[in-house]
Length: 117
Image 1 (cartoon, helix red, strand yellow):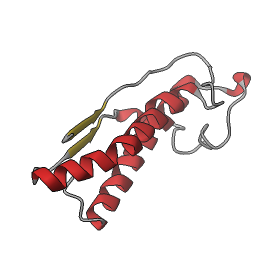
Image 2 (cartoon, rainbow, N blue to C red):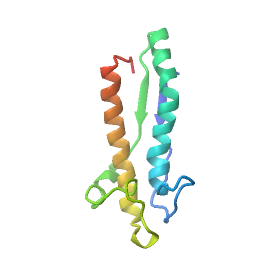
Image 3 (cartoon, one colour):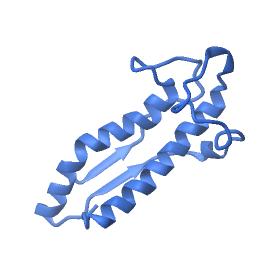
């Protein structure tokens, strides 16, 4: 396993929570990518080491993180919204901001571990 493409997502959906009680866009767009990466990362590190072929993780996002309010308001991941307070585009923007922050942190950790990814 040398390549992981994190591309699944939803956008601007009506208020809904996941089975785990997370805001749906955050749960799908960020936590889905995070959990998939956590499950596959050990195999990717092993493959890169044994094959000597650099692995690659591509996290697709959007300009949604620039939506006004996405950075300023408390993330729905931290404070689950009430239906009457839900702003679909802000929730989308926050999920995209999470994608970017996750990709940056993952890259820093992989470099520190000297993983060939």
